Image (cartoon, rainbow, N blue to C red; front, top):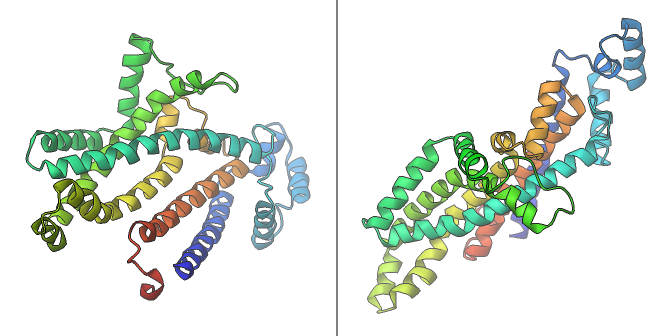
Length: 318
């Protein structure tokens, strides 16, 4: 297990290195002139050339990449070209807000998703199964931004129970923080709940039809014990992977939700950097999103061994 963890961690490092090269080359291929962005639209070509020389923008790309990567390793993400502020504080402030939103949504999904899937599998063909199927089809088919607009219209504009946008100010209290999170969290969980519940149902049905579950029932074990101790443990293996991947999605793929609710998270910050061609901010945001997604997948692989100790990665990895 330790060997497998080291191999997977090495793969994560390799992916991040490759992504850093791709991000660096892609952002430098943009038509934006970094020196012109810094100096403004009324700068002269001479001053732009002088600033480019001062910043090392006229050096070979390999030298520029080496300097940039070394600075990133030391925690220096550069200076925002638009806001003229260090990127690191803005980035981690936005990441912390996105993490709070994502963790709240993940708690809901990890709790209700498998529970709904297990109930639908155990009650196969009954009304809970049909109700879960309808919820899954609707949740997967309808895009998240639509649910966000519906929730804002219903609970913010009409009923005025909850705030329509933004995040709670520091020191505003737990109640204000929760109030600003409720609608974005509900919006995020629609599709993920549907996905996790259907996957858990399919996996649970496969396990319930297996020979060792039938043997456990033949020995006269209570149905509750058969489901919880014999079936559920193995049925959750694919669900764990999806949950970990969904966590990466929640961190990096909540751009639509953060935009609809004007939530100041990492996804909205990335959109801001793309719209204004803020290269240092764009590069750092993309790399952080990549790192989070890779670590989430690594956590999923390691959790396999925790849930099912019979798995031995070290002997099976080729």
